[in-house]
Length: 258
View 1 (cartoon, helix red, strand yellow):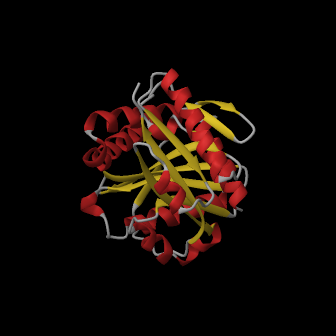
View 2: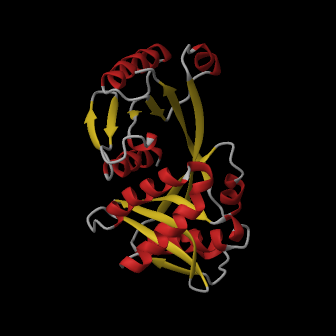
């Protein structure tokens, strides 16, 4: 199952970014939002040794500097030692993530707040999704980037061939949350799962998960997954909903002098 998840992660990135593929890695570039780390990254697609990983980091740094970019993100899905990380003599930050998965039939065990959760198939609903996304993300992204980010995503939502859909959550016709639904063959990725702060811990998150799992099952898909920060308390919510940890992801974010 983890191989399917990792393949789906690559397919998701392709919706936004052009890419170059080598034997052990893929480089992604999104010319429309070049300062978005997750759309402009290097994904290591095979397990490599720590020596190989260090060589890849140095090579990718050179490439990014030639592109005159101030950052490099390296992403991989295998374990490396803390000693290796601590010995890297660069200006960088480490982010750890967990993959959590669930069988879509498990939606029957989840409670439902009877929230209105709508697939964004018209301009009004998409606009509502844009508004609530900006509301949910401005505090930690900044207003300018939050706007540019969701407008970039909006382009892909409007592409009917992308298999990437936006769902919007309403309370009394007011948008209070949104979530992405990406299906790739026989698996679904749930992404950008946001409920605005004033409506969190009121059952809306469970209702969204129930709705999307049922949608996946109706689409003939047996399994869904999402990614959460390893240190985020949200993973406790996912566990309570029956999701299980099935893998890890590490991101190394380097600041470069160009």
